[in-house]
Length: 252
Length: 187
Image (cartoon, rainbow over all chains, first blue to last red):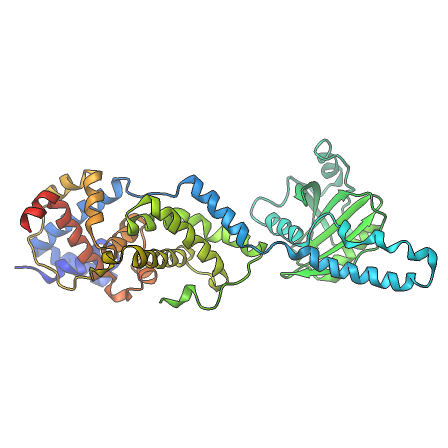
């Protein structure tokens, strides 16, 4: 008495997994097979019970927290300090070499040590990547520096210099508040041929530096420098020559 | 062992991996928890196992090359659950897939509707099924997975997902329409 279709094809039909021909064939079969008709009704009823009964159990809130903590523990600590550290150490070393020539200069290089960098490369890259996620790029979107600059008033304890370099090929897209190394910073966003460049700005008491050699990590480059009481870090996936060009414009 | 989640050794992950994981995999935590809860039949244990599975997924995240992140994660959750069962409740895994379908008169839709209306009863009935039956039902009916996804998650060949579901549904129907008392009397 039992129909072969009841045990197999009926389920493919119920789940919408039969192709058009198979489904049409089964529907023709249903017209003449009482067993399949009854069985299909039973399966549909069972399905609706399963789906209506609130059997789905989502994760408790606490679990999400625990997992996030576990993820943090399994993520390599930002080895970023290391990267700029050796770069800057190299710079310091060469300065040291030159310095050995003269007593006076010998006393200075320690001041420019890498340890004074207030944030890490990983933080810079993270902030950049996060900014590229939908809706995160700017808090104030404008190409007008007279709109972007006053926007920071009252939001930061310093006034970041905001300039548009559209004529040079770097259009100002807007500005954003961000946090780097535990400090509130201004992020200025420029675009260069559909690529975005974040320039992070924060105050510093350290003396001016030249534009440091580029750092590279995960396909992103950054340039760091200090100028007139401000610490700058420009980061992007544009070529280093583009990045350097923007850094020079900002440095002026 | 279904190799795709653990090809090479674990990687050292950095902040960018972390951000990608947060974006692609973490949103499926509810699905992970729900699957673990139904395979293990216990909320208390499934919390630990879901957490372990999630961290395991993270360690092998570099082996995930795009595609269906939910199916990829659920496969790891399932493997973690079975490893846990093997260690802690091996008896449950001894019930093999029953290849034979016991022909029985179809239950009437009305009788099923009444039986299925009771959440407690439905839960108990599901929990009497062997894990391999329960998981395909949960993936299909609660998680809404396609046959292709079910095949990927459970390592059942795609051609047999349909019959696996057919058997699981039949088992559930009989579990539902036989109350525990009746079942024990029959024995």
